[in-house]
Amino acid sequence: SQTIHQWPATLVQPVGSPLSLECTVEGTSNPNLYWYRQAAGRGLQLLFYSVGIGQISSEVPQNLSASRPQDRQFILSSKKLLLSDSGFYLCAWSDPGEGFFGQGTRLTVV
Amino acid sequence: QKEVEQDPGPLSVPEGAIVSLNCTYSNSAFQYFMWYRQYSRKGPELLMYTYSSGNKEDGRFTAQVDKSSKYISLFIRDSQPSDSATYLCAMFRAQKLVFGQGTRLTINP
Image: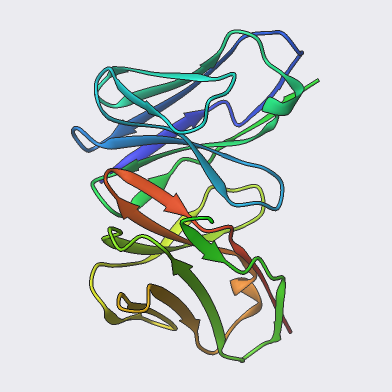
């Protein structure tokens, strides 16, 4: 069966520090991969999606970037975090249509 | 205008009631329609997945899709306190998975 791993679960980072969140999927090949951000009490905002290795589509211009170095690995990065980058970050995969989520990373920028 | 609109609620109903949750969408290119349940501080969990117009039933849950009206619904029968959560609709088109804002539901014992 397919599983999705996302870590860390919780992260507190100072303003201006770099960020790297990693997501890996097991049990499927060539999945569509997604990064979402969820503000408190709000819906899911699509940040990036990828349909294959090295193929990244950005939905919202901002302080973040994404990379897909391997088929089942998706990384969300920032060179310098802003206070406004705080939120709940979720990785998901889709094959296609129905999507399955990791447990999320709660990022607090202080 | 957002591609997917969902009333954020909150919605509060007594235990045993029938719950109706709804979303509308503007882009007829959406092909797949999903409902997710999200408990506090957790990732969303896929509840229902449909492709065509009509009804799909799974236990106490029924998903309904009306493509002509661009309207989807989730019905929960015999609601339980454990159903208290945020429910998100989602739709898939052109490799993108787009979500509604989510409806916060509370089932009161």
